[in-house]
Amino acid sequence: MRILFAVDQKEALRRGIDAPSSTVQLEVNPAELPQEHRDLIAMILKDGHDATGSVWSPERGLLGQLKLPTPDLDGLTEVLNKWIEEKQKRDAEEAEIAEKNRRRADEQVRAKLDMPSETVRYTVKLNEHGHEVNHAFKAAVVRTIDVPDIPNVSPWEGQYISPSIRAEVDRVTRDIEQTRERLIAETVAEMQAHDLPQWLAKQEAEKADYESLVARLPQGLRERREAGYASDEEWDAALQDLILTDLGVDQDDRIESHGEEYGWDFDRELTDDEFEALKRWREKLGDRADISPYRAIQTRQDEYDYGDTVEVDVDAGKVGRIETERAGITARCHVWLA
Image (cartoon, rainbow, N blue to C red; front, side, top):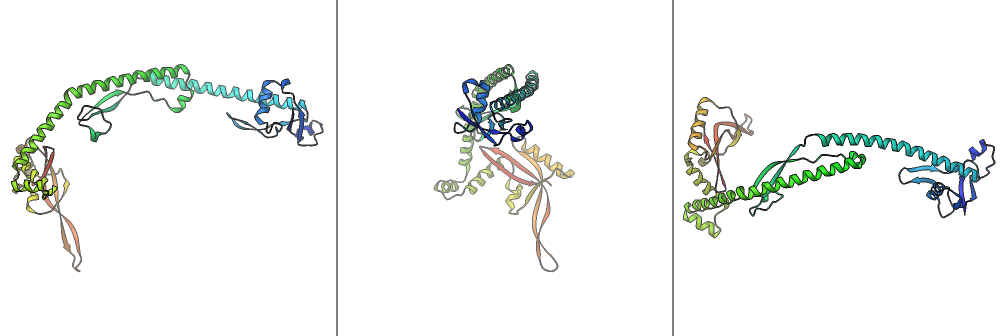
């Protein structure tokens, strides 16, 4: 077959060989060429006769143009042998680099495998039916456990590690995954046997407590609620009032009952009298509610000499924030610490 090749006219001139054209057509018998020569020519052969284009390797990208130093078959053989020699040199260099990378990657991964297994936190979440769920808002009961962590092999390490190390990583990973599954299954069984029944019993108790609170509300409010004429705010306020009253926090004690509006800032600095008042409330409430010290801030209108007004925050004194949860309802109020 006749194939068109590019000619390096400068090199031909240096050798004293006449190369009047930058290309030459040569009669090539593929059967007489070594396989490596055929492969190189095939890489750049276009339309079955043109080999003047650039050599492109899928592994290395653009390698350059195949230019004959002399416009004959000897020049073709020379340039093909040169390209093969350069390819073998590049392959050897790349193999050496790959071997260095393999040894380094193996050492790094082996060190990770030899280290004591670290643990990570895993949260087990079950819904009211005892089934594991992914989202916390769907969970009835929750437990957090420690499970072994899977060795972290970086993408670079994964590219170069030897098959034996990769097999070891896969084996360790399978063992850890099996251990994780066992620990999670054991935790789920424990939660189904203990946590979930306790939660269900608590739900039943809260439901009964809620119904008992509702039964104590004024009949008129209950009838209006059933008919749709009582707002959620009024209903919740009435229930919270019952809860706070049961704690022994009378309406007269609650700052909110007197109609004045305040803002609240958490504050742990108390005088002796304020601290004694806080202790008395804690003794009274016991473990039925929490109380924390806050500063009451009242916003007032202040007038400048030239008539403009501005809002000013005034320190109104120290208070205790009482907060409790009962029957699924959070009740909160503030009392003066004086």
